[in-house]
Amino acid sequence: MADEVSSGVVTFLEREQLYVILLNHGHFLSHPKGHVEEGEDYRQAAIRELKEETNLELQEMSGSVIESITYTFQSHNKDEGLVEKTVHFFAGIAKDTNKIETSFEHEGYKLVLASKAHDRITFDGDQEAFDAALHWYYHKDQ
Image (cartoon, rainbow, N blue to C red; front, top):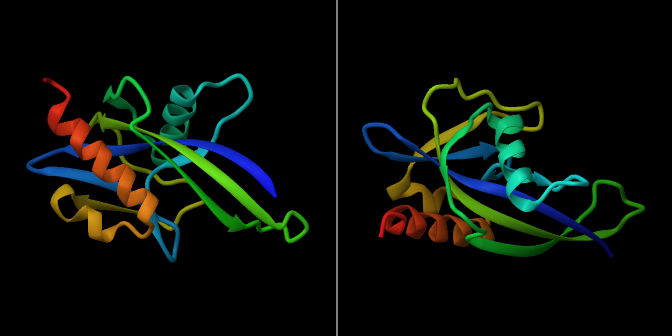
């Protein structure tokens, strides 16, 4: 079994209400995330992936990982078999200055009210990361 390590950001956008940005992968919605490249730490990878996948930058970010999830999936390369992936999530608030532009890897995005986002997120681990990020958001100034 191959191992992968990724990093991502549960990304909030503050407008008239609080929103979370979810990427549309066609058959599921999830947070911006991607592989940690050589020489990067988890934080650097999360910031880079957010920019690459959404064109957004952060105005504020959690100081440490808020949730780590691990799951197994079938590799697209059938010779590789199963892959065990660990994703380290941060929480962040996006600057509302850039137009959201998704990368070629996605079929767009959904801007979902934070109050309704938990049930819109497809996978349990991503829901857990969202819940941890929401807790960070409401307690970050304490």
